[in-house]
Amino acid sequence: MRRTGWKARLLVAGLAIVLPVLAASPARAGFGPPPVTCPPGSSCYLWLYSHAHFGGSHSPGSVPIPVTPPPCTWNPVGNAQAGSQYLVTYYQDKAPARSAPNGQYAAYAQAEQMLATHSAEPGEWYFRPDQPGQPAVCKSEPRWFFVVPGEPLPGGTLAPVSLAQLATSTLKIPGAGQMILSPAHGPTYSNLPTFVRVTFNRPYEIGPGGAPYVTDYAAVLGAAATVWVIAEPLQLSTNDSTATRYLSGCGYLGSQEMTLHPRQVASTGANGQADCGLTFHQPGNWTITATLNWRTCWVPEVVFSPPPANCTPVPGANLNPITWTRTVPVHEIQAANGG
Amino acid sequence: MRRRFRARPAPLAATVTMAVELGLALLLIGALAACGSSKPPAFTPGGQASTATAAAPAAPQPSGPPGVAMPPFGSNTHVVMTGWVPRKTSLVRPVNVDKDFELAYLYAEYTGGQSGDWASYVSTAMAQALRGALAARSVTTESFKGTIRFFDMSVTHDPKIRADVDVSGCVDDSRALNTDLKTGQVLPGQSASDRSYYRFTDELAPVADGQWQVVGNYAPVYYPQAKECKP
Image (cartoon, rainbow over all chains, first blue to last red; front, side, top):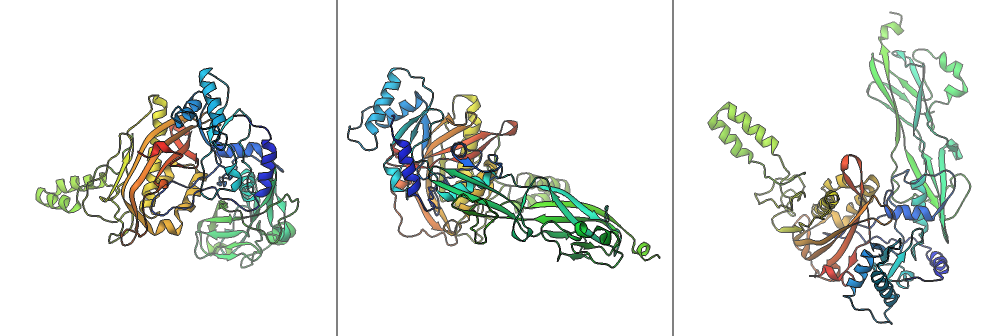
């Protein structure tokens, strides 16, 4: 079934949807189908990705978070032959009334014609099931739609929260680069503080308070969202339970003294303190682990700025932390004491 | 072909008794046998210890069609999975993976979200979405009993990602009832409705080593739109 003017209707639909619309079925107690999702790797996600515009560098499926599906859901039922047969069988080989809503008669006629002519037209038939809680705009969309490659489905406009999830899923979030120590290869001797600093493996921006972040936006006709993924303060840990940790100056990337005052850091002796680091008190091969968590936030518009103060977390975006690890040898305390 | 939850483990007490009678060598053999056949026992909603690994009274283990892992539903729950497989050999594997996923997800609901076996059949992003759904209070406090049937399955290539396949099937849960997870008592106010009959469609993608993974799903189609799903 071909229709004209769907773009105009899409615009209206997009403007009408101002609140997040969860097309997914509510979590059903006891038993029931899994909730509908649109995660990276699925055709639903790919369809959304191909119809959205993004800002900055982006890559589909970089972050494995689910995306809330479009408010009007469509199920594929087959190509020009298989889909047409499914459609005709759905009506038990008897055309629906011409007055049947949502263009059912026209769809049936189109399917019959495709079968009669053994059509091999590229494309797929889709069926639009009614869903609980779907926006009213969906009910006016066709029941069946034959989509040629590259053509969007009606009513596929996303709610802003879905666009936020989509944008988050495309962000290239920095990973662990290097863990830099001072002394360069570890503390060498017990009681000598080890300064710790870390680097990322890809570019990032600096927000308020020095927090590294990356940002992106996604937009479709009538809706948009900007997301930020922001670093949380760096955490240090070690498998030596007797070690002393210095975290007060860690910030987001570890010791600032290592970059601001490298000479003082290099000359720090036994029993000194690091702004960010550890002091081991016993010999052994100990592992230093630095962990950085990410938080997300989004706004329902396109914004070119650092993350705003009052920003809502992106639903479902539980991002994995990144970690840096290094094992350092610590020698006998007597050596440090000159014993 | 994977088979899990199929054979019941030999009762440990019986194994030990036999070992005492037959000597140290047989004790070793018995112990090894018990370890080797270790399978999770049937989950019993409202049982003394409502966990997926809790001990349960002896009950016949449910079995599924060949190539499909039927989870250990309790004796008051009957889950019937169609034995249908596609003629095309290359599509048998994804269909069976989808059957495994549907059963494992149903079993997760049966255990109030405690069983996590379903996660091995889905992508990371899909798992994240489903994990959140299974953590909902309405799931973690309830189970079910009765009969649930999977039937009228089909498989097609996904229209958008041609390497993927869409596996579809009907579910009839009109003869199942929600129960309280702790007490096992049937919850009030339940009756079969049009939402007891629906068609599901899952999208599966090929991954390494000839394996398949559920990467997405479409909205369920309920009766009367899915008229073929009401027998």
